[in-house]
Amino acid sequence: MLAAALPLLLQLAAAVPSLAIALPLADASRQQDLARAAGDAVNRLAPVVPSHTKAHTLPSLSYAPGVNEPLYIQLTRSLPAILDNAIEITKHSWELGTLTEVLLEVYNPELTPFGFLPSAWNSSAHPNLPLTVVNITAQALSAYDFSGAPGDTADHATLLSSSSPRPLVDGAGSLGDPASLGPAAWITANYADQVRRLNDTGVSGLQSDSAYAWAVGNQLAALHAGPHSDNGTISQRESEFQLWSDMGYMIPPFLAYLGLTTNNATLLGEALRQWSLESSALLDPQANLYRHVHYFDTGFWLTGNGWMLSGLARVLAAIAKSPYAAQFKDEADAAARTAAKVFAALLNSIDDAGLIATYVGATDGAHALTDSTGTTAVVGAYYRFLVLRPDLVKDLKPKADAAFRGVVAKINSDNWLTAVVDPQGTNGFIRNDAANTRSPEGQSLLGALWAARTAAGQ
Ligand SMILES: *[C@@H]1O[C@H](CO)[C@@H](O)[C@H](O)[C@H]1NC(C)=O
Ligand SMILES: *[C@@H]1O[C@H](CO)[C@@H](O)[C@H](O)[C@H]1NC(C)=O
Ligand SMILES: *[C@@H]1O[C@H](CO)[C@@H](O)[C@H](O)[C@H]1NC(C)=O
Ligand SMILES: *[C@@H]1O[C@H](CO)[C@@H](O)[C@H](O)[C@H]1NC(C)=O
Ligand SMILES: *[C@@H]1O[C@H](CO)[C@@H](O)[C@H](O)[C@H]1NC(C)=O
Image 1 (cartoon, rainbow, N blue to C red):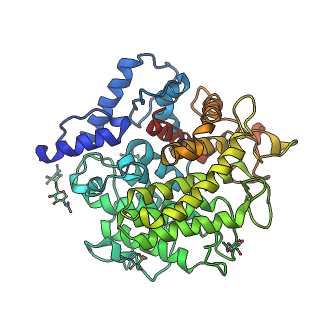
Image 2 (cartoon, rainbow, N blue to C red; image 1 turned 180 degrees about the vertical axis):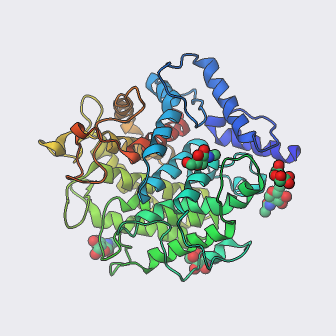
Image 3 (cartoon, protein in one colour; image 1 turned 60 degrees about the vertical axis):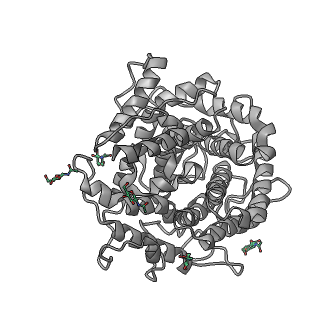
């Protein structure tokens, strides 16, 4: 057992900077041990923890030594508490999708496209169980009707051919948003039986692996059964065909993740094609920015640009980690070149504090106020591209680093990101500082930003 586990831990240590300490671990407490070891490393380097910080439940993190930036070190220390806050306020489908993806990027990068290790997908052999994500996903699906789910089925990929369209969670009229929870549900389908076999995990009420895999197949069928345009673009809304830039993060990365984990080139190709179609529909080729929605709110909403870029990073990383990278070389290159122009348009518009306006290019009113959530999304995606395609974006790094400092400076002493747009769009997708708005996705995306910069190592 130990002999088999050690090489994997060494691989993990290489792939997972936040867990860069390999220990021989043998039981259910191994995840906590790993986390504690990582935390010890942080504490040795950084003994001062502000006394007003409330106790958090997520493990401490260690930082990439190559990143020469004090605010990065500060973010490393506060991120567990930041993500605890995110967990506290996350409710809606897309918020759950973002939160679970981010928790994986921070604590289980080997299960995300960015650090994917096929060996980690063998759940019985993997020492770093994604317990928090399995727990959150199981709770999000606690009202799901599992009647009709198959008994134990070893081949989960076949369950993806379901013909019973049904979203994982209520999308409140959105077709795309519930799909964002798909990767976490697919991971839950891979780990639920393993977690149920262990005692003392603090996770209860789990269905079987096959039941979750079946639910993911139903989610995939729901996407395919929804409205499409003539050229095959999947709609972001359920009742009629609509394009929203948010969809870039909700739909293509789900397809890409299924493709990566089942070695399915069709799904990887569909992911990239969907992203490219969305991009073709929403990009303003003069401004090199994405419109928010195709028929109303047609301005360059910053968070939507962040969703498009962050989604593409996940799709391109999945393709790069798959055996099919050569097959998709040209389409992937075209998408990356488009994204590089969008990064330039966005990062060239940062203000003196490093932040970008809620609607890029707006000059007055609430649209011109800077938005911490959108800036976080854009800069997080930027550091991913710095690894995926340094040739296209490396010249923008000084601006991205300034934007990194800008958003970290907007985190208050209670670990909430401030000056954020209202993601519900109650009075428009703008800031409402008087209401003390908290943004579930902004809060989560700080984790995506940290994970991306940590992986970039600079
Ligand atoms: C998964 O890991 C277990 C335990 O190390 C091993 O027995 C099994 O052969 C592995 N399965 C695959 C498909 O590699
Ligand atoms: C699982 O979620 C429940 C409810 O939020 C929480 O009480 C419990 O601590 C969580 N367990 C883990 C391991 O995250
Ligand atoms: C979990 O508890 C059951 C029942 O007490 C026991 O039979 C089993 O061996 C335990 N499993 C582990 C992995 O400790
Ligand atoms: C790939 O996935 C699609 C969609 O689920 C499925 O129809 C197809 O059979 C899969 N291909 C392979 C080779 O598994
Ligand atoms: C695909 O269809 C959408 C919706 O009609 C349209 O906006 C977009 O330009 C089309 N893209 C391509 C590449 O045909």
